Length: 201
Image (cartoon, rainbow, N blue to C red; front, side, top):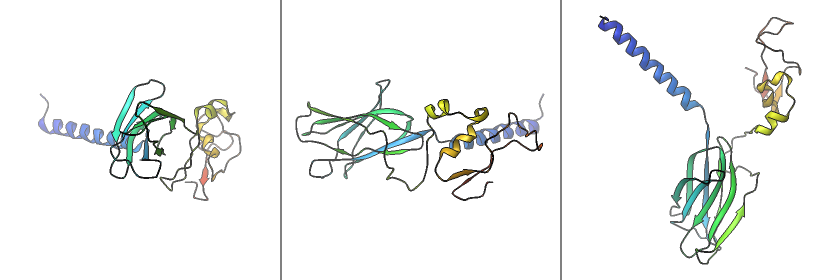
């Protein structure tokens, strides 16, 4: 029979491990947000407009929200994907923004100006691929799948991709050795880089 104190220690160890794993999960950002404002042709906010977010590829409705008193809407925690955004309001034509690209940790702005008319009529807009981020002052960059696959990376070391971001300067030659140890010096095989003049470590 197991001693009660050893059982308590085991229970404490399991609880500690669960809290540690929870912290790791929280620290990894894997989603983005779509925000915007719905207005009429004169620039007046439209309250209570229905905004429907649909995955462009699967055609499944992901989220439906309504605009607040200022005509604003926010749809957080969306997986990275292309989305179709449909906006409907009584007395206005329905508007569809197609294939709005959402990247990881991005706060994508989609402002809509509805045209007066029958809701059975619709206006379709094809989203632009590039957009200036007006929501945050954070400088960031997304390395897409095509860059990862097509760029010639020495030894396929993913750390080299960070040098594609503005403000990043590496402090190593192009050669990065295979494995964990640099054969010429016997030291750890690592890639050091500086971001906007900051310390490498």
